[in-house]
Length: 239
Ligand code: IPE
Ligand code: IPE
Ligand code: MG
Image (cartoon, rainbow, N blue to C red; front, top):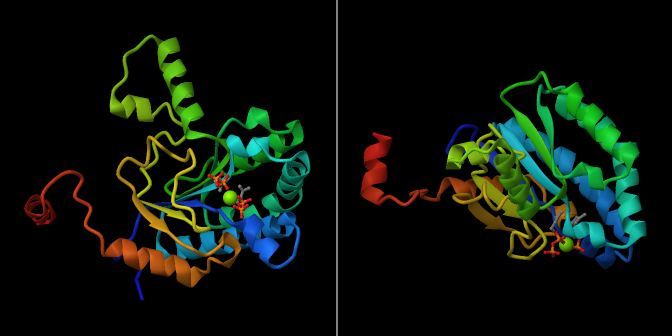
């Protein structure tokens, strides 16, 4: 069993995939899967922070997902309206700051307000963060950052460019976990994940347990992150 602080990622990002297939396998509508996914998400977050992780980012809705059937999108928005904020209280009680990643102007007005109000409620917290990617696409995020740089009329460096992304001033994700069997990033954190470790689980998100997360942490703890250097150099760095 992995212990807190033992080669643990500081920032984990989760592509919460498989809600629909999980529901379908139970002969239930897709929304049943999304509801179960939301409940699982909050429990999983608490477990991650209990283990000692400082930042968790979850991918909840991509720019491409906005092309899903209207009824499914409306169901997801209704979940945000009715269940998201009360669940968030459990995160805020821990002094964790919420940040929305994405172009929320693409969401209904009242949902935008729910999200920005929740963001404001936690804006005084420092050191620990919870990012939720909604109406998020990494390409759109990068293009937005380029345009911000152009407006400023200044050349960018890797560092100043990173500060124009939604995740500005946060540590990069160390570990990206994708549930739901697929092995792709689907337009998630393309700039920030340059050196992230990737972990894929065959489990559908609603069935990805706290023990499964520990399993991912254990796997991560055994990896050697060389960042382009040799093993010998890394040993020297760790002295
Ligand atoms: C991920 O689950 C959650 C969202 C994209 C909203 P899916 O809805 O993609 O579930 P599957 O992949 O169809 O099983
Ligand atoms: C990725 O899942 C996005 C989220 C989990 C929010 P998708 O189900 O949309 O990904 P693709 O379409 O299979 O690549
Ligand atoms: Mg999917």
